[in-house]
Image (cartoon, rainbow, N blue to C red; front, side):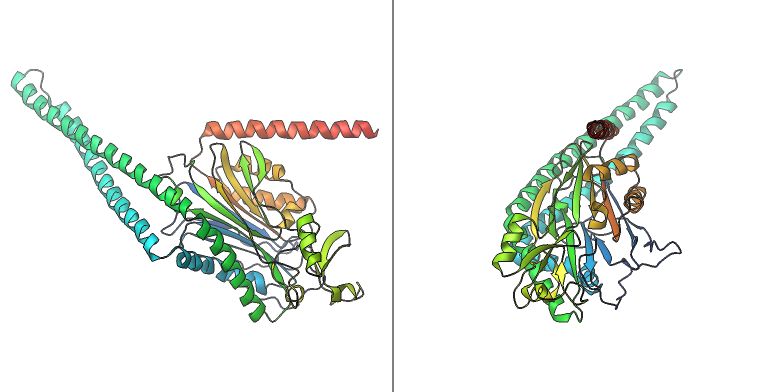
Length: 448
């Protein structure tokens, strides 16, 4: 949906991750973003991809970002611009770096020193384990060759070779035991780092809010236009992840940080579970906050909007009347000065991946205007092994359902999940769909 009454004509070009170009069908499809993890905070087994279209609009004001280069780990962001692209572009280039910087400052060097020592020891042990595994492979190969050299006609030859075989077998057993010991020690260090992350929870909360305030202040100072943007971050804590993509990283933790009406949804056992709340002006708590600040909430063109006293005094037909369909956003100077009716304070939640969690969907409100959480899960499940196809399917479905807004979807799949877990989720999804169809039929019969 269009969040503002007016639009800026200036279309500032985004960086290489967010460029868009219109095609002949007015879809303005951005090249699908299929990222591989390159960075010191990558998470084994995680697959992800993003698709973004302008949809029915003439230009795409949505932006997205992903990075595995910054502490505390792999991060995904979706930014839904309105009234122009300055704010969304600025956020896609600077927000993640700003948050990471504030987190480091808040936690402090002393606490980081403990974490870095644990990392260094884990890296050394990982290298030693890999070297041992290669050595064991070589010894097993030699063992197989020795077995073929045994001559049943020569008793002395058999005894000599058997002695060598026993010696190699003993060495392999010792090395296997050493690998198991390394694994046990690594597991202890992993639990220590997970505990460390939990202890920093207050720092994470404080840092997200402080960084968002700083970023909003910079946008208001530097933005030559009146545009704004919502923002949704999903930030994984790499130190809570398992050591390989073969492990079920049930302890994997991430934060959702949300300003506006982009939404993050988890597929949990085949059911769509919203992880974030939409900040709309008619939410009772938000409406109360706005009205206490001297603002107004009313329906314009069928949608609840926040507007100032000055805006209320202007004719709705006039192009410069400013009102907004979200109650929290970056930018939007006219609704923040002299009184901040629209807030940039984020909703922050900590989420731990559960056993039956399969994937995440992050999407702009153009998707959620026409698709439910369950719709998105049902669409992605058949593409569980292909994040690119999944993201593409969501955007196409929203477009076909008649969304009139820009469409952006990022799909993050937990690749270590088993086929049995996937099958169980598919069955649950089918059950949910059948129940919904039965309910619709019952309503139709009642209307008749």
